Length: 629
Image 1 (spheres, rainbow, N blue to C red):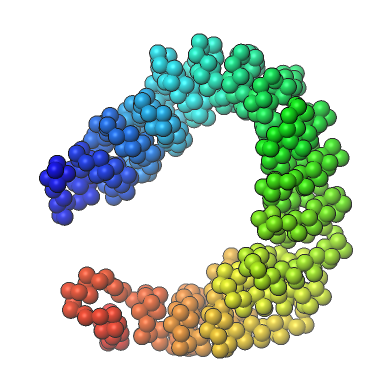
Image 2: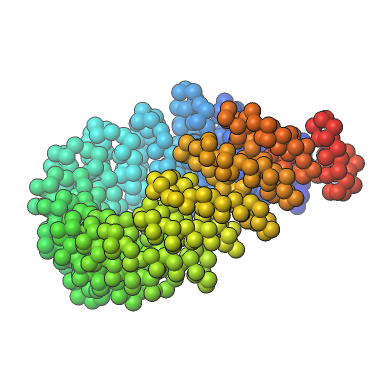
């Protein structure tokens, strides 16, 4: 009944509606109010927001509905972003003060979900603040929270200290944050120690290296021997962050032995976490630091055993995901230590493991170079191409990059594969992937392959029944034309004539494709070859400007407006005539494209007494033709 009593005045502005309903008796109205607030603030001055909108949010932090508090927590960062983009320095400081005052109770909320969302929000908006604003308005409050009686609040504070360190600068982190981290690391509640272990690496990265070694590393090593396995697991998860902050010699003497210890921990969860983060750890090291034993550990993950006893289904996934980073770190000279692991992953029973490898095969090829790619990765490519579509697509998506690594002789063996993709009928997305790479493939092969295989494929895909495939092929035209010029082919005229055939094709989609190709050339980053476009494309484009299909005239209009802004074309009689004709076209969308101001609103049509769409279109055409629009 209370909800029914609440009046919604249609003359209210969005801000007035917010002001009236933010304290509504109905939870759904309050929720809608809070969710729509950033959009309202986008059109509200910062001064008005500070005086008339943000003060009303104080009560929302104590709303009885957790969904409403959650919505406010989600909008902390959007509120700051939309206001700070227009605020004076003084207003910015006020905005941050007010939003932090809203953030603090949400960070202490009784609902864990609300606290988590608020944490993410604070981290996000702090990332766009100046160091001064964070130091003045936020950090002292977070430090105070780290001494709170409730362990949840100390855990939250530790996360924020870690995440905000990058904004604060080395001096503040060293003087203010680091001592609190040391204290929290010896907290009596294990969940606080766990939070410290998880985020200490981020603090380490933003203090001077000697401070990290002398003050924070001993604390981290102590946490890694904690009696609670959850704390040790958190240490395994933050190991790469800690390692990245330390000098090479210290990493070798402290972190690598620690990995040994965690990888053989009595807890399966600690062992799994250590192996899960081994790839990122290796990626922080230099090639000389990566020991054969460490590579053995990594390679053992491919079988799911991880050199630690019982197998685990997730280990091969972690191994596959980090493979390119590990290969990049250790270099091609150490491929011998990794190739068996790669082959194990290649035949893993889980398709998601094989899919991860297929998506990264081109990255590994770039590291290994032509010889090793031919020897080690081409067999893998052949396996992927016979696999499930979910796996196959990864290899196909970057096929041109992989072929680009190979010597020309090895590359030529894959021409038949490229041809088979063009004939792929079961899955049009494979044809689309091929179309997207045609420009690169034209660059990779010599003239004989370009003429006999790639040129026909391009033409066929330009007429593909699926629009996504046709459009992908059309977007490659600029690069293809440049390649034909580079090769100085004698059949360039034949190629051009076949393109021009699209413009007169009885199938309207093919004529539209030619107009789309014209637009692609006009908006391409490369400088337009004016003489080529005048000779090979403009005559057909002018004909399409009179096509019976409105969509084609609309696309031609887009191209002609582009040409109108180019001195080499603007004065041409054909262009001027076509532009004038399109400006008096009988299709509303064509007129819109030509920049005619036409209000299509149904309300306006109603007020003008238009009875139906046909009448409306007729009246609009008459208005345009008489020059009154």
